[in-house]
Length: 219
Image 1 (cartoon, rainbow, N blue to C red):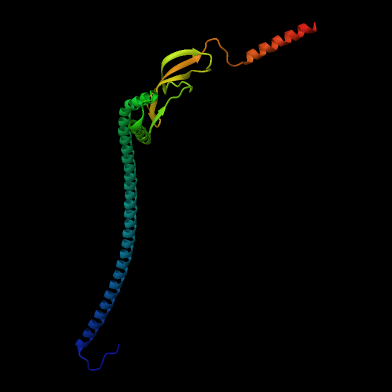
Image 2 (cartoon, helix red, strand yellow):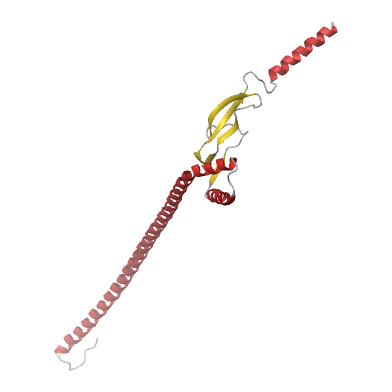
């Protein structure tokens, strides 16, 4: 750089100072730009981490809500089942206490005493208990079932081929599949020594006898 003629000695140092200051300012600007770029990159990485963490938290909260919903549904089902059970027990107890009244109505009907206003009351009561699920069972001629019948009388008969209820002394009652009271019955068994059906052995014996008869006639 050409120095001006007649310049003072201090002018050179002043120019160098200005140039040095400009260079330092330029260097500082570059350093700030680099720092800003680095900060921007760090901020982007931090934002991605925060997004991933938020997604994980949302997934965890969703799983918690689904689990709570399933537990609540199970709780509702259990409460409803318990409520129905309590109702069935209460209804069963009431109906069981009415069975003696139904027995009295049945005996009165057998003697022709269910007439007039009493007949209307009796039929209304029987209709109500039937709607509540009480069922009467036990008929003459049906096979004897120890889970449903209680034998109070026993006899033998050649008219039956298995243990049979020949008389209903007292009807039975049930609610659904639950037996409240078994039917009191008289049971008849097949007569000992009687043979109601011809088996294979008897058929073979008859066939052998026929062969012997045919052979004798040929001779």
